[in-house]
Image 1 (cartoon, rainbow, N blue to C red):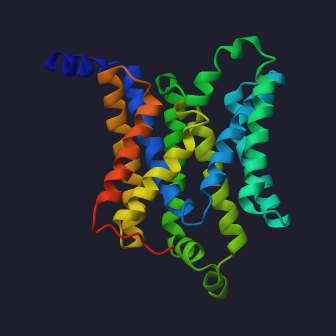
Image 2: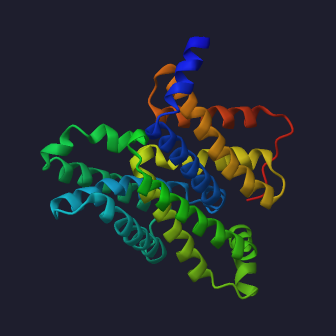
Length: 277
């Protein structure tokens, strides 16, 4: 066992493993921070739809001969705003409409990717991510985006809490609900889009939902809930990366498994009480 730990320590001295660890921590912080509001606003499936739409954005970028990394973020924002518009304008149930969007985006994305030979063998990396492929530029963008998310939440905290817990009261207090909701959706789309490379299409929603759900079971105050959600996202990323290196497991699924373990532990605590939705 000591030999294995020594091997892991040596492994994390390599630059690509350090970048992977930092990428996991940044993604966990961003996912937990925005996830704390996402699950209370019942937008969990919305984040899943954003993640699976990434395949469609990547496919469009490849067919246009563009770098998918540059296409993905603007596509995610436009897609998120379009979905939000459809949710407001249609009479369909939210879960039904999101299911249609989610499945059709995934299907169209896979069809488009099938026309590119170089990506036919890379579908698994797109679906489940490759955190070891995170570059320094990805870390810089993630760090900047985390700063923007933290600044936005910090500056509009009271409005975000009112909008989350009691929208009619937020309106009566003069909160610009549409602007706040749109800004939050754009940030969520950017977080999902920038995290796809590391976490993958199928697992990105877990980074938004699971840490926030565990924090909700353990927190009684909203501010503590937000901080705990971000903290659990980062901690699970570190533990998951260590577990991945120690047992030679895929990094993304390892992190999500750790998140699940934290959630189950939180659910088993007898005194755990969820804050009011």
